[in-house]
Image 1 (cartoon, chains in turn brown, cyan):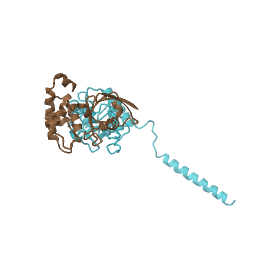
Image 2 (cartoon, each protein chain N blue to C red):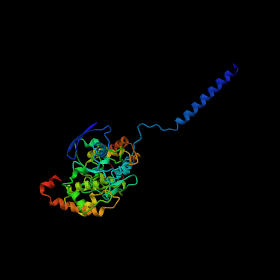
Image 3 (tube, rainbow over the protein chains, first blue to last red):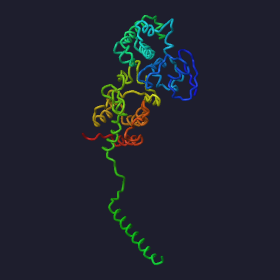
Image 4 (cartoon, rainbow over the protein chains, first blue to last red):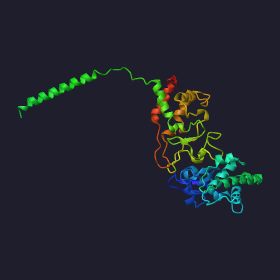
Length: 163
Length: 201
């Protein structure tokens, strides 16, 4: 089957034999965007989190057939080196990653959270950011999420609307 | 050979008579009935409750705002909870992981509008009678009359998911409720057709 989708702003047409193929493998193996990671493969750890129409989704458990016509954002499309997303900037400032493997999933989940809750409380973070980090960087991530919210609020309104 | 033929004939005759006598004795032991045996309302009620109290149904009808999972009804992983609209939290919702159908690769179950039943329809820890009272009470069931309840119980895709629960993360088929889907639908329709009577306490 052929699937049309937009990945990080670029329209893509992919040919896939199995319509249940996880979106994760299309992103990584067909479109060669390796930032999104495979972790548990059962939608538990969150390493594969990306955005589908601005909603956080575990891509290891998201069949490609549901992505038809959708807009996908991965860590590669969140910001650029020259103009990082507030979440990426905050992650750099707080030196969050240790091994780094799970971090793209956390950052995408945080980006989704800030769209819904621009100034999340600790309780909002506990409820919404439920990914797993084996290095235990949770403490720095919490600081980074609050920092990202602050950076986001400093953006001009038009920039915030883009986020 | 010719001498043994009469003996053989006699033996066959005696055997036939014995079987005939035996059969007539057994038939006389049965009562004949004019119409099929009526299934009591209480039986229908308990058949319905056998399904509604099965983990496939009960796991999404918690009374503590925590979805349950598995036959052991353990709290949902990672502290997922009801949230404001029965579908999780602002950015991490049920459909972050649960899509419109089961996923055979990840083992994540899925069905349309995956989420918890409203808090007013929490059943966990209640008796069968209490569950039925909540089910029938329009103040707790979302204003549904009997017709709407039958519709919900027999046609809602998420309710009927219980008979297509898919496989778990290890590829093992999930257990289905104790009645077949067809038997369950017949039981629902009969219980409501008979007035949805809750057995006396």
